[in-house]
Image (cartoon, rainbow, N blue to C red; front, side, top):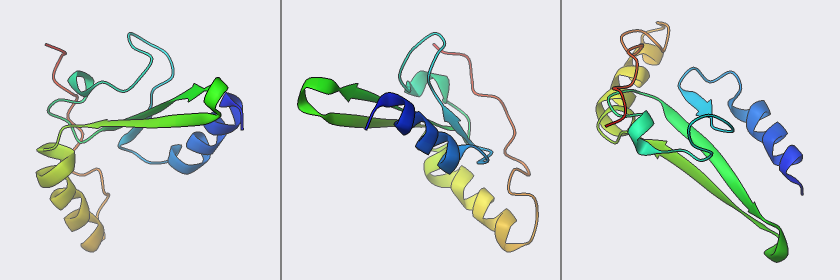
Length: 96
């Protein structure tokens, strides 16, 4: 499997998820926790190690928002038939 195939799989699976961002370009090439602090976002990415024919998959979350409180609010919204993004749209705090 090549990088393009993996990117397509990520886009197909996560492309419509409101709180998942696929990290491919930008200030860093891989997900970094400092870019999700204070938000409900989950940044995902990967690296391919061609000689060993394997890929390492990465994710970065703020464990207080996405991992606990934000997840509870998101699930409550879904259970109540509300937009799952309700109350969770704040931007991440700037990297420190």
